[in-house]
Length: 257
Image (cartoon, rainbow, N blue to C red; front, side, top):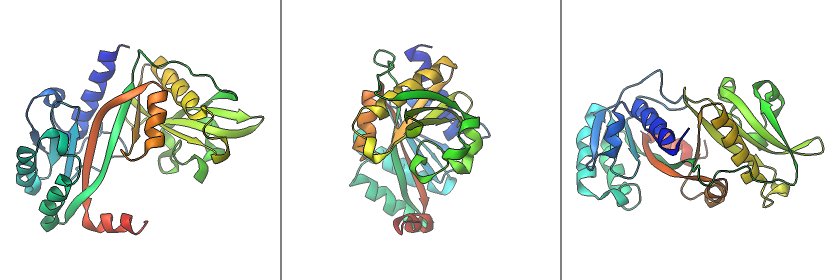
């Protein structure tokens, strides 16, 4: 697998998720398409999304329901790419969506392996390869980033760090779509800042590539510890996303629901 095939795989998957063509992400102008669902989309996405914007750096592709298309087009035509995913401009889009019962929901940055930098990093603790059959005992709050009990059937591979027989760190991946597996990572608080997270993340990324799948990693822009882990692990930013949500669900999230 090459750096180009990794990128092309991600572009194909984003095209499936948004209902557009892979080449739409490399155009030099915004693209707006009608939102649709697909059985091949990433499993955790709630589709069709009211307004779903993705950028790989050249432009923004927006997938929206019909009634939100004019607002999305006006927004993307008004502001330059570099500012469309950040305040204060997102407030403008939020206000444009409110009359239809929607607002800005989530934003995130996604990472792919950098084959020039990805390597198996050392760890002071024993690391073990884990498979789906090993995960049943680990669906606990401390491993909620590495594993997802709601979609347990998708948790296919992991790497654990052990202090004796005690699991102290876990990187897990979910088969969220046919060609790409998403990495999540947890380390117990008392074992952090020892390089365990990067050792587990880099090892799991390599294991995924060895299985002819593309690993990807996601974090919020403000989650600097997670972003630093991605950089240290040999990953690099590849694309950004913004998804609108119903005002009711946004209010629920703000209440801690």
